[in-house]
Length: 426
Ligand code: PFF
Image 1 (cartoon, rainbow, N blue to C red):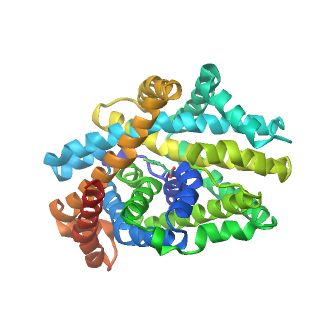
Image 2 (image 1 turned 180 degrees about the vertical axis):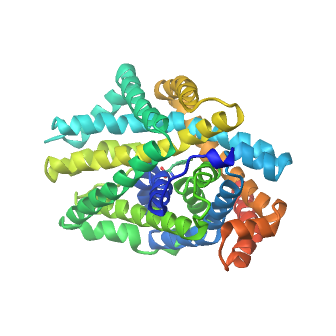
C-alpha cells in the first residue's frame, strides 16, 4: 500500500503545497486586524514566539506522524496511539466543517472578483459598499451560487490528484500570489498617510497585550499554520521518503509569516490613508472597507486583490478537503473520485446552512478554531512526544537537532497549550 501512495514530486512542490495550505483567509483578514487590536509590534513578538516554541513543534509533530505512517490522520493515530484515535476523527470532522464554512467566504471572494472585473466598486462610498456586502451576504441565491462555484473549483483540483491537482496548482499559484501581494503593498505604502498604518501594525504597545491577546496569538498561529486538524499530517504523508521535514516545514512557516506581514502592509496603510477610518474586523474590513479604498487606487488594484484572496482561499480549502478525501480513500477504500463526490455532497449541505444561517456559520467557526484545533494540536504533540518511540520520530525527522525538537514537542508545546488554554478559560 505504502509504495503506491502518490507523492508531491519535488521539495519545491512540498513547500508550495504546505505554504498554500497555511496562507489563506487567516493571513489576509485575521492577522492584520489582530495585530492592531492586541498591541502592534508587541503582538507580533508574541506571535513569532508562539510560532517558534509551540506551533512549529506541533507542525513538526504532524509532519512526523504523516511521513512515518504515510496515512491520513485517523490511520496515523490508529497506528501510533490507538487509544487516541478519537483525535484523528475529530481532526477529520474539523477539516470537513472548516471546508464548508471557509468555502462560503471563498465564494464571496469569487463574487467580489467578478464585481471588480466589471468595475463594480469604482466611485463607491463606504455606505454604498456596506450596502453591497449586506445585499450580497443576505441574497440567498448569490451566496449559494458563489459558494457552489468555489466548492466545485476546490473539488476539481482535489479530484485531479495529489501531484497533478494539488501540487501543480500550488506550484504555479503560490509564487503568483506573492507577486500580487507585494505589488499591492508597494502601492499601498506609497499613499500619503500610510505611516499611521505602519504605526498601527508595528509600534509595540505592551499595555494592550493581555492574556486574551496571548491566547489569540496562539490560536491565530494554529489557524494560520493549519494545525490540529491533521492537514499537515495528510500533506506530509505525500512527501517522498527522501524528503526532509525540517527544511520543508521551516520554509512553509516562514512564508506564512512573511505573507501575513505583507497582507498587513497591503491593507493597513491603505486604510489609514483615509482620514478618520478605523479598520474593522474580518468580513467588514475585506468586503466593505477595502473595495472602496482599493478602487480609489485605480481599477486594477481591486481585481488583483480579490484574485489574491481567491487564490489564497483555494490553496487552503484544497488542503482541508484533501484531509477528508485521504481518510475515505485510506480507511474506507473509496476511489479518489468517489471520495471527492462524497465530500462535495456533505460540504454542500453544511456549507449551504452556513451561507444561509449566520448562527451556524459562527458556531462552526468558533468550535473549530477555538476548540478542535487547540485540542488536536495538543494531542498530536503529546502522541509524538510520549507515545511514539523516540528513535522512530528521530529517524523520520532526519536531523541532528531532533533531541532539541523532541523536548519542544514533548514538554514545551503541550504544557504551553494547556496553560494558555486553561488560564484563558478561567
Ligand atoms: N491556514 C488557513 C488560513 O490561514 O486561512 C486556514 C486553514 C487551512 C485551517 C487548512 C485549517 C486547515 F486545515
